Image (cartoon, rainbow, N blue to C red; front, side):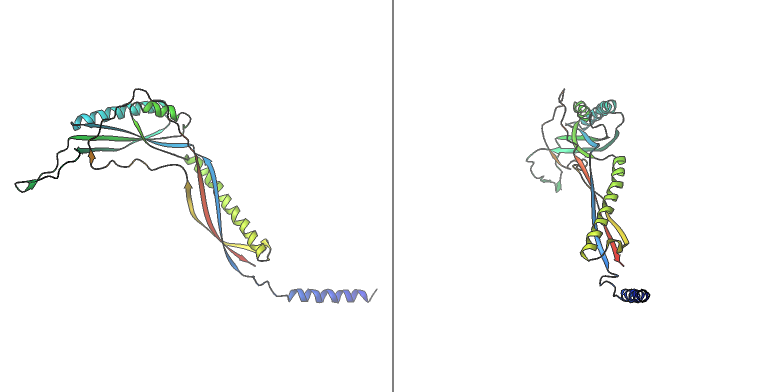
Length: 257
């Protein structure tokens, strides 16, 4: 028994020395570039609606007067039905209307006179930003008695987008850790041996939704067209707000011990 203990001690010393002299893994010090991706989805809770009014008349002043009156009336209707919405008037325009199939002007005494407009086209836009989506069909229908809907874009309210941005970052970083585990296993290393050196967030703020662009400016030249009359009553339009997807990419630099 007394000889067994020294023999056991010597064996342990040799084993420890052999372990200390074992070569480091072939992947020690390897720097790995790891891309990661994350996304979150949420139902749209904000709408930006662009209303418009347009008038045609041989008398430019009369067309402008009707536009001003209808825009004021339409704005009052909207403010009464949705007082919490944000409103902004934009894009007031006045353009001449020329007859169809107009012949190229001929010079008179060496001077070419420009074509004479037969009428004028006057219009204006009104933008409404609202989160009252449940009441939007009723509000829009009431305004359509005077105004027309030129464009509608659904998206996320700023508070909702901020909250989802926090979730998007967390999902992206979670995906990075999951990929590090997979890469470590593929390299025959332990995930604990991977050290994150750098995290580079790129492409933040990317989102996909069902929105559209704001109203574009009216064309510079317009042909004669029939005047559109506003209906006395309009049935409620149907809206599908849809959802928004927020996406984020990051690139992590991971070094293995």
